[in-house]
Image (tube, rainbow, N blue to C red; front, side):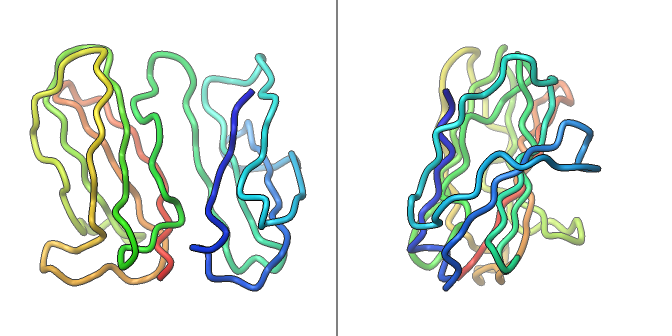
Length: 173
C-alpha cells in the first residue's frame, strides 16, 4: 500500500476533483487510477507488484489548471524518497528533500527550470554515507536571491559516479 498525498490548501485552486493516472510506457498513454475529491489530501493506492521498474503518475485537477507528472523508479536505483510539499509555495514553506544512497558518494542537488536553465544548487558536492537517510531543504530562491516564479521545475540529485535522478516540481504561490 502506498499513500499519495498533497495539501489542498496550498494548491490555491477552486477545483474540487483530482484525477490520478498511471503510465507504464514513458508517458505515451495513461490509465486512470482514481478520481477523488481534492480536499481528501491523500489516496491509498494498492500498488501492483508487477509494475515495471519505471512508471509515471499524473495528478490533474478537473479543469486541468494544475497538472504534475511524477516519474518513479523502483528497485535499488531509487535515490529520492520524497520531495514535499509538491506543489510548493516558497513564500510559505521550504521544500524538504529526503533521499538515501546505496554507497558512499558526493551528492549535488540542483533545481532547473522548464527551459533547462540552472535556478539553484541547494547542495553542492556534499559527502554522504551509504544507507543513511538524508533530509536537505530548498527555500525556493534563485541564485540571485529572488523567489522562483510559478511553474514546473526539475529537482536533480546527482551522485559522484554520474548516477542521477530527476524529479518534477511544481511551484504555485
